[in-house]
Length: 318
Image (tube, rainbow, N blue to C red):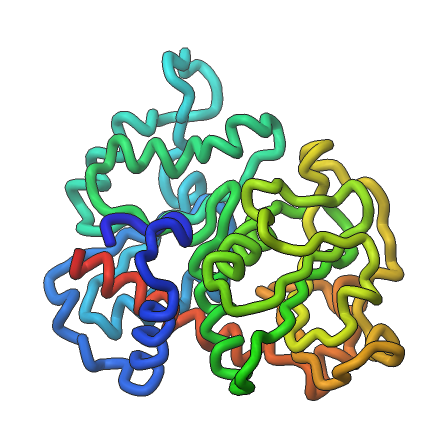
């Protein structure tokens, strides 16, 4: 694996899942693989699980990991071609990335969409600039459009929790929020579930909140949450803003918050509920769900270590 930016960089999803699960059983089995290798973790926005899990994964492989919060612990970067840098940006990516590429063997980068220009966000301006100028492998810790490490952990978790000899029904359902939220997790979850190919996949959201068909093609799309939940084995809950009216919040729709009542009139009352975290309790998900037997959020978060370790090991081998 040369880089890890999306599921398209993965030759076999099942093999990567099994590699991650093998690390879960024996975390230090490849502790010399990353010996004398340095991992640069660049954060353009806050993180808890992604930051810590990737550092643990790197340590398990014998790598030295150095974290840089770009803009607060380092200079703010300019990405525009031909920019006249008389504003707040102090250093251009053309100057910074080659140096970081010389300092590190692998760069892992986390950034968010700016919601200012859809084309810039969709073109992954930040990730592609590092790919172009750093000249070392790039691992996405979340980008303007995707969150592949999270999605790999999602697939690992569903694989562990479903042992029946049939396809599980997997539902991605929109949830309310108090502000505009990126599409990254929803896009990535859809892309990975479709690539995995082992589920009956449904996406439910209010009208106007449809994700880009670039990522959702192959899924059943509905505006009826109740029909989507019927027979569900896994329900992945996440908010996102409008894609068509880019970054806008079109309505609050509090009735879309998942509660136990949501499951009272549908089949398969044992459905497991997932969320990437962080989340706003009793806005996106009710306490009764989060603190009840449906929730596998903690198990999912733990699997972030093994998803990161599997990817880093493949990058090192590549």
